[in-house]
Length: 102
Image 1 (cartoon, rainbow, N blue to C red):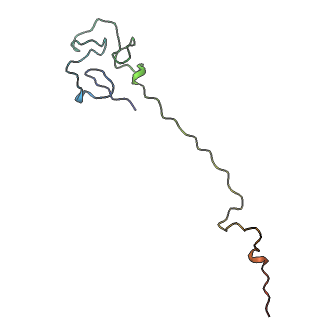
Image 2 (tube, one colour; image 1 turned 90 degrees about the horizontal axis):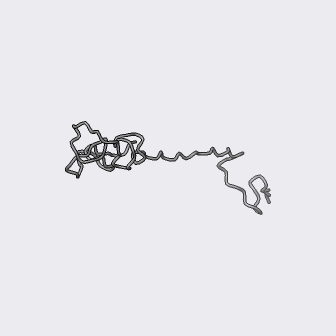
Image 3 (cartoon, rainbow, N blue to C red; image 1 turned 45 degrees about the vertical axis):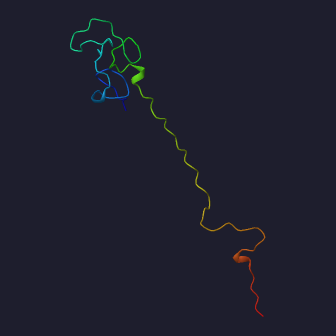
């Protein structure tokens, strides 16, 4: 995803329709002058100060770091896993009980 960028002032964090700046900035040089005029100045990004136009994909401020992917490791299958409760030590299991009749 791309960050919110105002094409009016070229600040990051809001869009043009809610831009608090009354004057627009040139997307090439970052100065406050008419965007419709052909700018003869050297490119300078308003966001980071780099030597590129404000809407360049090369701007480090416009990059959002990718979310870290978590790798899920598969758990090995349990051997002889049943729903039976584990036998307790000292107590005989059902097959070990000997019934005696009088």
